[in-house]
Every structure is written in structure tokens, then in C-alpha cells.
Length: 231
Ligand SMILES: C[S@@+](CC[C@H](N)C(=O)[O-])C[C@H]1O[C@@H](n2cnc3c(N)ncnc32)[C@H](O)[C@@H]1O
Image (tube, rainbow, N blue to C red; front, side):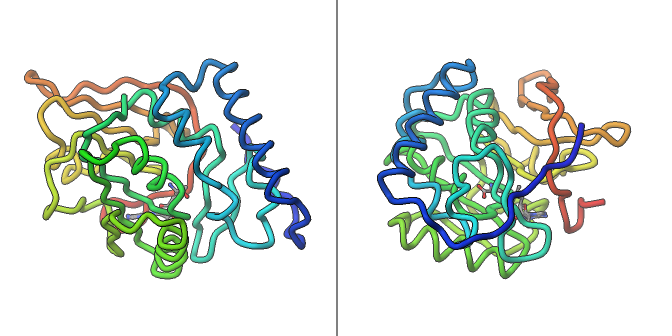
């Protein structure tokens, strides 16, 4: 697994209409690749202007398959395909109580907010204060005012709103932090990049009556989890 080649920052030149066309083409590409199946996730990706969650000088690259740097230490907005890659195996759906660990730009939380709908809820935790402020401003500007935003160590979860039906960790962990599996509802699912012998594997954890069942989905490359359960 190699690193990423990030294009250089530049003055944005693309029009809103151009970015809208790129967004629609990206969604079609994700459907064609078999990564995107859920109609709710498809509608969310079509609706949300991803460019509005990206720092100004990287805005034109919103639909490129590269993670882009965010304000803060080691923070990135993940590649566009990461969202169906995480949310499809999770089976994220209407009514779910969703926790995101690693808010980053706020884009993943906005997508989740659309998917879980009125009956669901989204809590998102970010450890880096600068990244947190960036995401908060993006979400507010885009009108997502009812996402519960927490600037703290997400490895500890967020007990006030537990249990969660679905949890997504968007940074690589040595192993899944125990507070997060504790805060998962019975029958709930958690997804995270987990380290194994120096490589990262996207892992789905299901909380069943007979315990936690872990399945590896594919190899991935994410920034490391920080805080108490970081490396
Ligand atoms: C790949 S980025 C997240 C991308 C984000 N989901 C988005 O849509 O932009 C991973 C984020 O996890 C954050 N992070 C790392 N360790 C964390 C922790 N213990 N608690 C909360 N956030 C953490 C990083 O600061 C970074 O912003």
C-alpha cells in the first residue's frame, strides 16, 4: 500500500456548475464500481457540496480520489469513495443513532446526517481543536445545526448519547477502543481501519448475542488515531 500524491494548493477556478457535474459523475462512478448501493447514501452524496468542506486552496480537487489536508495536525478529508466504503458495510440507514470518531472536515457527519434522517441522530468527535473549529464552521454554513459536535478524544466515545446503532472510526487504531464497543447497542455495528503487522485493514465489528464478530473488508490507509487508544 503506497502513500498519496496530493496536488498543490491553488486559487480555485472551477464554477459551481462544474463542481456539480463532477459530483454527479463521481456518484455514478461509485455506483458503477459497485461501491455505492444504498439509495439514501446516493442521495446524500448527490446533495452535499463536498467542496464546501474543503480548504479554499484545495476546493477544485473536491472530487479527486485523494485525501486532502485540513487545518490541524495530521487531519485530512478522506477520498470520496471512503464514504460508501464505510457506510455501506455499516448498513447506515434511517433512524440510526450514529457516532463518528474523527470528524475531520465535517463532510462525513453531514452525509451521515442526511442518511439517518429526522428519526436518527449524529454525534461526531474530533480530538484536534483547529480541525474541530473548521468542521463546526463548515457544518453550520451548510445548515447542519443538529449534529452533536464534541472536541475531545473520541477513543473514549461519548457516553451521554450512548448506545449507538452504528459507529465509524475514521483514523487507524491498534485495536478497536473498548469504550466504543461498550457504547455500541446490541446488534450494532462499528467500522474502523485496524492495524495488523504495520498494515491497515478496514474492519467491521458486529455486536451479537454471542459477542463481537470482526470481519476484514479490505486494506486501507488512514491517519493514526490519537489520544488514549492511539499509538
Ligand atoms: C481521515 S480524518 C477524518 C475525515 C472525516 N471523516 C471527514 O469526512 O472529513 C481522521 C480524523 O480523525 C481525527 N482523530 C484522530 N484521533 C482522534 C481521536 N482519538 N478522537 C477524535 N478524533 C481523532 C483526526 O484529527 C482527523 O481529523
